Length: 246
Ligand code: F6R
Image 1: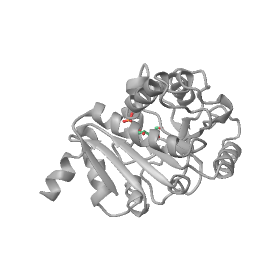
Image 2: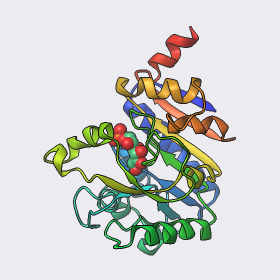
Image 3: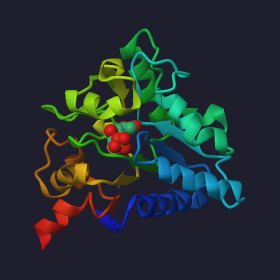
Image 4: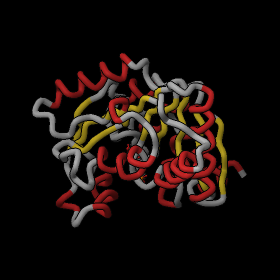
């Protein structure tokens, strides 16, 4: 695992955007695995800026998002489809037909998970998968549990995730209780994984993911087994790790 320690969120975003831009320049028709949440917002802003300057094109890029709340319509302002449109897709030249997010309104969740997994497989899995990390070490919405879920599946969100995400909703009661998420197996099939993390509240999860045992109790710890992971984090998120190695 390659770890970049950056001074703050803006520096994390810039470093992550460089890595994604390099991937797109090297392979214009690449498959980008994308994430939502606070962590990648600055990264997307930087990519949009380079696109607007004429330095970066997404015309041939295909994208697959990690997850979607189950029960939210694509035009709900807290759905991950809406997030992607607002933060990236509406501001760059990506073909809307080439963007993929699980359908949060699918009546049959199991069938939707199978369809989505097949779509990601048809595309050949991600060339580069962008990830954030939950405070409990989740990646995508793979919450701590007794095993590593392999494929796209319906998951019950952990109480800590509902609490953490309540900041985007009117109240914790409005946060959907379930989500459709790529499995750990789907994520691990990506050729390269880029993790962006910032803030002291992630320090414990980062420490456990990098230095702790590989365990489904800390889903991000599985990344220790992937041959090409780049972790870009600020000093606060790396604080526990740096303390431990001093
Ligand atoms: C989002 C996702 C989640 C987030 C994680 C961190 O698509 O899959 O795993 O990356 O919950 O969220 P933030 O960045 O808001 O702290």
